[in-house]
Image (cartoon, rainbow, N blue to C red):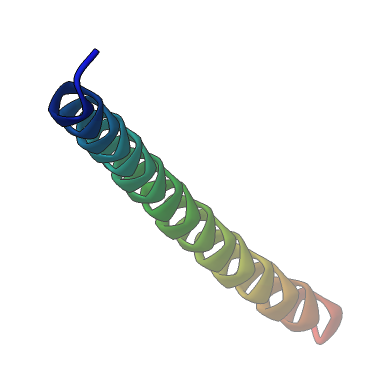
Length: 59
C-alpha cells in the first residue's frame, strides 16, 4: 500500500471516530438534561406535598 492511501485511511478513521464521539456527547447531553428535568419535577412535587402535609397538620 502506498503512503498516500494509508494517510487517507488514517484520516478517514479519525473522522469516523470523531463523529462517533460527537454523537455520544449529544446523546449523553440529552440524557443529562432529561434527568435534571425529572429531578426538578420530583423536587417540586415533594415541596407541594410537604406544604400540603403542613396544612393538614394545622387543621
